Every structure is written in C-alpha cells, then in structure tokens.
Image (cartoon, rainbow, N blue to C red):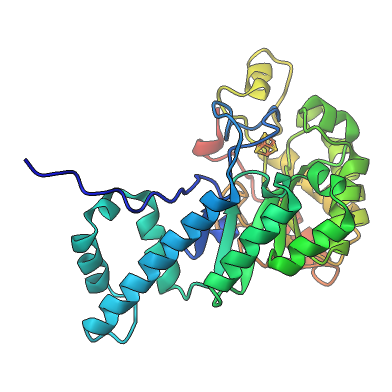
Length: 353
Ligand code: SF4
C-alpha cells in the first residue's frame, strides 16, 4: 500500500481579481478570505462565505511556498538547458517530482505569472486594507523582498476602510509596496448608496478616495451604469460624476449593472420594484454622467459588461485597461456614445433576463 504524498504546497488562492490583474499575469496572494461587509444588494461574490483574516505567518508561508516553486522551476529549467526560462518541459518535470501540484489550483497561476515576467501581484480578497497596518506592512515587505521583479502590487479596498485609517498608516502601506487600490464606488448618489446597502455615503467615498490619493496610491474607482434603474438613473449619473470629479482618481472603470439571481436586487426586479434600463437608456445615462465628469483620469470600459456596439457591429468602446484620457478624449467618448445611440443597441443574450 503506497502512502499519500505529503501536502507540501497548500498556499491559498481566492476566486476574484480585477480584469486588469487577469490574463494570468498576476500573482494572486490571499490575505483575507471573502468580504468583511458582504451586504451590498447587487453582489453575489461572497454571499455564502464567512469573512476571515489570515495571520501574517500564514500569508508569508504562502509567499515562501510560491518562492519555493519558482526556485525549483528555475533550477529544473537550467538543468534541462533552457537557461532559467519557464518551459512546459520544466513544469512537467516539477509535476513529476511534486505530483500534489497537479491538483493545486495555484500551480498554473504561478507558472503563468513567472512566464509573463513575475511583474505584478494582486492581494485578495475583497478588502485587504482591513488588516492591521503593521501586519499588512510586514506582509508587503516580505512579498517585495522575496520577489524583487514585482513592479506593481494592487488590492481591492473599501472607501470606508481607507477613510478610517490614519494618513500615516496609509503612507506606511504605500511605502511598504502597495501601489494601487481598486475601490468599488458603484454610485455617488446617497439615496442609491443607501438603497443598495453599500455601507458608505457619498461623503465617505470622497473622503476615502481623496485620502488614498493623498497617501500616494494609484486609485482605481469602479462605478455601475444602470444601477439606479429607471427610477434613479438621472441622480445616479449626476452624483456619480460629482463624487468622481471631487476625487479625480487615476482610473474610472465602468462595470454596467446586471441583476444576478439570488441577490436582493434581482428579487426586487421580479416583483417590479426595480426596472432595468434598456441598452439605449444605459447609454443616455452614460452620456449624462460623462458630460458632468470633470477629471484628469483614465476612463475605462475594460469589462465584457460594456457590451454596446457601434454601427459596424464592433464594440463601441475600447476595452483597454488604460482607457480614454480625460479631459483630452472626453469629446471622443461623447461622440462614441452618440454613435452607440444610433446603432440600435440591444442587451446581449448573456445580459438578458
Ligand atoms: S464590499 Fe464588494 S465584495 Fe463586499 S458585498 Fe460589497 S460589492 Fe460585494
């Protein structure tokens, strides 16, 4: 009877990360599990899961395991004559000597990350800044010392959590190596923020966003076209533009709303309390928001939910992670919206209900 191989590699990988950290180019490192707030009415991401902090020792242990895999892959690559490059042959030889990695969801992620130059990392899950500052700093320092090739480390963070930290703490986190925070703004309208149970006011969003900017982070704010439905679209557009103009973040990313089965907002839709915008109504809302937006940010449509087409049947907006530069390209974006409004847009099948 053969003994089970020892589980040497048990580092954790969470499910979610922003698209700009996708394409398997980023190392995903799990600092906490799930979402400490977990009440937003449109969100289904962590609904059945309980929030947990992980200890710095656990997280640093994960970093060490990833480093061990990297070193072994590099050694094998040299031994096989590939000069340290990440090749399929090196991966196969490592899997032969550590077969438990065949069943580890993180192995392919680590391999792809190494193959793409090991340049970026994303800290999971929904709000890493909720960790104690000294613990987060400790983890970041260990990460940066272990992988000097990293040139960008990013994380999700809630506005409220950022607003609650002292500026000096945020600066210490920034200095320890966290470059960018991805913040779910969703809307700048107070009535809608309350309705969706975001747990923050527009003032809180402004405070958190501005403080993150002041601490030296690159700030990436996500908003949701369509979130106000037919009842609240106008105030949603105007107040979102107002709040984002106050913050003036580096990135503003559009994540059009669609109701996910099982969420309270979906429930409201089925009982007629929430009415979804049509494709054209969403574009009209987008136009009003953009007209009122006074920023020096990159405006991004870097997600498949930005489905609108132009009159040739191609995507209306570029889905580049770097988007359109405002104010220079504001008139271009407004022209594109007008073009979309003439193109008889419909919600695609995957967004229909
Ligand atoms: S804070 Fe983010 S992850 Fe948490 S419930 Fe809200 S949208 Fe979902």
